[in-house]
Image 1 (cartoon, helix red, strand yellow):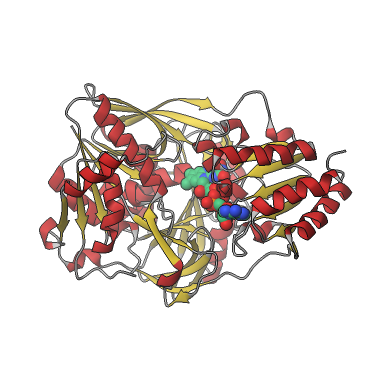
Image 2 (spheres, chains in turn blue, brown; image 1 turned 90 degrees about the horizontal axis):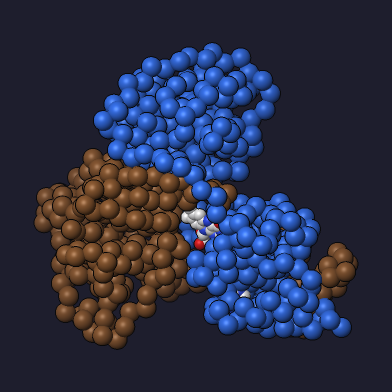
Length: 317
Length: 263
Ligand SMILES: Cc1cc2nc3c(=O)[nH]c(=O)nc-3n(C[C@H](O)[C@H](O)[C@H](O)COP(=O)(O)OP(=O)(O)OC[C@H]3O[C@@H](n4cnc5c(N)ncnc54)[C@H](O)[C@@H]3O)c2cc1C
């Protein structure tokens, strides 16, 4: 079989998930002695092709058209390439841009789409593992189609290493300019301001478990007592209770403090993406099944409104 | 102008739960309106308040049990609702994005909206692909993960921000008609007023079968099949402190002091 994996880049940088796609693609191809093809669309495709040429890549298809990601260009280019190569599995990233073109490609090529896979296996057919209900349960999904589109969750597969000897083939996609009905006009950085939580040694981070804005004072007291910086999961920022620059996660800041104390935070994948690099992770959560306990080093399964006051008192004495 | 908002009743799973076949045992779930859809509904209602002659219609795929949840959107200002359901649809079966989009597209073709808003994803199965699949089935433009929307109805353009990873937003102009998948935080969803809740009871909530939207059971055929549901093995090597809050907090305080916290 053939696996086709589509690399991702943004503002001149190949993103980490690209080399993870190579690993996932190579594993699948190995299951049937097949070939791994990689595609890279827009930007400095030759330079990207060079960096994508890792161990196990057979062919790299480059589509030179435009600089930055545009979903109409990606959709057309990847659709044409997939129709030409007819891959058994078409791999794309479960990133914000992946979500913006993968469903359209799947629809045009007529492939079923399985998103956010955390594991893949091939044996007669493709089986994907994904998570449901905020990562509390896992499910396996079989595809009975000859060919299937999959987006993979970032940071689930290791990055491919070693240098390969792939053939680089420019692919002449026919891009219909009149079908490009959206235009990227620029980029904007958000979340600046007075504090930089990524500089903090100790973070006290609060999530939806705090319930009410008034209750934040309790967490501020804890942060003061521990001489720590206050950060939060997304819902706290969405609610306007703390500014954007306090948000940890995929769309917030990536933090690597010595100690990260997650309080009333479930540990959703987009949150964990921002804090899994902390040296010591402590979780306080009353749900023993909360996924945060999978990555925590220390934990207390209890009500935060009982534990936090006791912690303030315990630390002061 | 007409805005169609896709909404879904999602289930949240209790702290302790049991698995029943390919689903969660009903005793351990609570139903609610999908968090992302709340923001999509609010965005549509705000458009109807700031522009003249905007009708907000919600559409859901769900059994009659979902009606109470769907009325929440009517109570917050949506004008009417459509609920697609059919005997051929099974309560527990997983619908893949292509199937969901086929049903929603059939409704969209009847309604002919200028703008469709969906949530980025639903909180229970987190597929995150229905909105863009719907757009492409309809042949309209789209944008995924939108956290700011400025609609120029006259020019037929939506100026949006797409929230990328790492605190970067992409500024994009999208030609209408379009499907936008709405991210949390784009607005501040209102609470339904008592008056709104009362009014919602008399707003139209039309039930449609597959035949009503011009489809038959073959629309549900999918090559994707859910084969197992299980609790993942805990990867955690976490040390869990046990005892009263005073005891556990005391141990944690000791650990933190050891790590040099507060010095
Ligand atoms: C594209 C995209 C980007 C995203 N980016 C981010 C991001 O950057 N950062 C981010 O954080 N999220 C992000 N999210 C959202 C993410 O999916 C989750 O919805 C979010 O992280 C949940 O926050 P939470 O853990 O605070 O809330 P919940 O998941 O609701 O968890 C609350 C937790 O508190 C616990 N709890 C409740 N009451 C108590 C109590 N009294 N005592 C102890 N524990 C209690 C509960 O058991 C639960 O585990 C993103 C989502 C998408 C789709």
